Image (cartoon, rainbow, N blue to C red; front, side):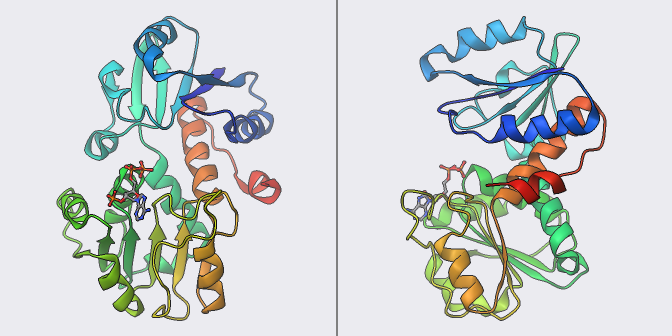
Length: 271
Ligand code: ATR
């Protein structure tokens, strides 16, 4: 089973390492190749890929939206989110999915099952592409409220409008989020703030954090972001960014292979 990742730049991707573990677990023979495509070559390379023997591939920055016109089918979730991170190729037909948001929700459920038993309030920091997938997945869970804070509030408002369920929530500025932080049981950081090399940056101040709140950061380089260190100091529970990476990969591999795989070995050895 030949798999791959398209994006630019992708030289430091961990995905080949992760998917090799799934190949080993299932005994399926195959490989996962990095297919770096320069933006000026996109259309030409995609047409070549369409004629290739790939069984499926992941899509990362900057192509999660650009790939959509080349698909033959798209899942309802991915269509609503407006981004695709997984393509299944069958009989020369490409089917697009988005496993990012569900990857994070599955990871959170596994580590903190009581978050989704009812009555809890979540706050998402950021309203970009990553936030859209996460918001969409969270909105289908058993939460009392989901608010979104963003530097540009209008983007947070637009994202709230995507919600097809009745879960309540507000669009907030970062300042409003900081002042009301004690109201939230789950905070998910989806911006690139705090990523290496700017690892000392923190998108909001956590001085009003409630003890026992789960703080999840999708940034995984560094492993301990400034936000997560601060959250732990203040009595929060932390959820590291590599969990989302591993769970979105698990869900993608399961779509390609139609077999269930475990993330625990990769979680234990991630570096
Ligand atoms: P991605 O697909 O990774 O989510 P994106 O769609 O470009 O990327 O979205 C980036 C998100 O990070 C946005 O919420 C952006 O805020 P704006 O909508 O106000 O642009 C946020 N972001 C990026 N850099 C930021 C910074 N320095 N401070 C605060 N928010 C930032």
